[in-house]
Length: 207
Ligand SMILES: Nc1ncnc2c1ncn2[C@@H]1O[C@H](COP(=O)(O)OP(=O)(O)O)[C@@H](O)[C@H]1O
Ligand SMILES: [Mg+2]
Image (cartoon, rainbow, N blue to C red; front, side, top):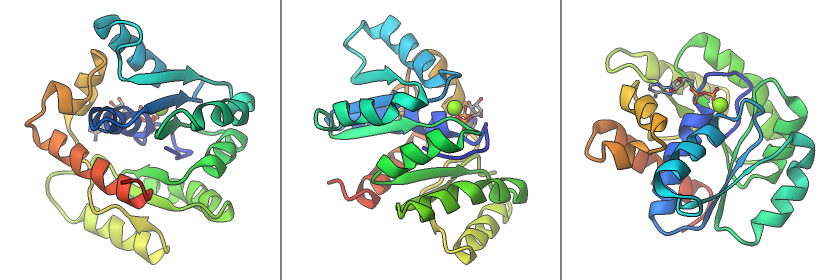
């Protein structure tokens, strides 16, 4: 998950997608490179509820300069490694992007967010990594999502067919260490997350 803009949805995507993938039986490692440690706080809440070792994940918090070493260590033991990268950190983002089979770039459908995604998309291109923009917090009505998708396509960026609406359940379920698919499994938001999770596995070439 990469996007130099804070608040775009990196940690949100990481947690909710990881829950679906883990639930499918994949062995999933979570790597939190963001010093803010939000993914770690979420995983901690999950561990408090389910017990250490019963969260469905191997979790590591890593300072950026150790990322390469840690990734080399976990890659062989897990099917999927989800990296939540920090904002405003060119070097760490570059290491994370370089290691990735697929770079997910959450983008809120507004001109400011599209512009802010530019450097991350350029970084993925420079590292020759496959990047997919994921529209996040899409309002229920209006043309903005289609406009954003068109603009991204014009910039030569692949856009995920699945997107996430603006859903309070995405935020609320994290507080208790849940994914939305666990806390509100039949909600529209859960359906969006499942759809995105399946699409990203095929985009990453995992089956
Ligand atoms: N689709 C969404 N619907 C509702 N709230 C969202 C959505 N995506 C993100 N948020 C909220 O926006 C804030 C920023 O998201 P976050 O995942 O922490 O971004 P980042 O990790 O890129 O800084 C959080 O409070 C999160 O709960
Ligand atoms: Mg974050």
